[in-house]
Length: 178
Length: 331
Image (cartoon, each protein chain N blue to C red):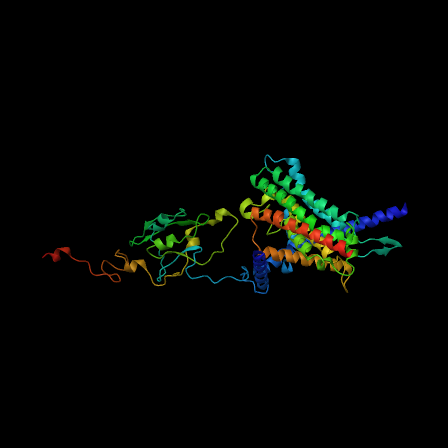
């Protein structure tokens, strides 16, 4: 008999709790009208950014395409006359992309970055293949300062060996003889 | 002859109105349920189709009618196709004995506000309610799917078990009203609704009715997380819609029967009788949704224990007590 009372009590308290919720404001976010502010590092559509001087950052090192778990990034690498590497074409197939962000982590030049834009669904699957001109933007994305060729030891028009930021002059190994 | 034709026409008009109203209300009961349940779960519910999502039932119907009507490979075609109709039809037929007002006089002729005043109205309800088991069991069996079959078996077991307590809980009502006719039962509640005399029968009836209409917490035949969708797993389009419709008409029918048997039917002050009946049906439906928002699904053995070891003995004791009181006090 006691267990019956227990059951009835629990039943009524449950019904009461549910009834109280009737007067709460719904917590639903009504999507197209209200868009939740996303964190800066939210992973959405991928872009190719520029360095602060306006040149494109990508050096076609293929680290992003190597790390990509679904193999959706492909490119070709080439070298400019001044020694700077670049990608003549760069392609991301967003129909495959899982927005994991590995490419962004792998990129040594902060060229490939993920944006907070997630609303790029389409009905035609072929239109998901983004070429370089679709990916390229003229801002720095999340990394405002970095310019790879100012730091790298490669000889370009940013400087010769030993003239980059934080780099010391090349050592003449023969002068170091004891 | 003329009188006969007039009676036939009146019957047809009544049928049309009742059928139309019941189907319309069943459609909007879906909306009410989704909206109310959503509020209980601090969500909004449908609010895109029309103001407050009021066009949602219409959108659903259009969607279901335009969907492909599939029959799975290896299904028993005949039974597969008629099973949803059985569920919807039996549910709708049950409404034909629910009275929704006092007799009115039209063109010098007495018109009872009920589709048919059967003198075995209550038995007819039980017959139809039992027949709807066939829809569930056949639909599950004919779809040639293990989920469908399991759902059908569970549905048959559950509905047969709860049919008993449902019937037994109403025996005291029949004893008090001295009639099986729904009209006479409402008549017998002229002064007090039967819920005051028969609270136990009322509770047993509510629980059994929820089990009969396969509502949460008794939705084992369709248990989404074990059986996909139970007996209507393989159905699509309007055939699934008919199962769905049957379920909601069932809720309304049980609301109506509950109102007629325990809450005084169409009786009530100030408002017209039909409105009172609808209010009572609506309140019962709201209660069912509230319970749905609260309770988790029962386990199969708990379901059977509740049915056979609790509700049926309780209903039998209730009959005995009512009979004894009637015998002693000459009620």
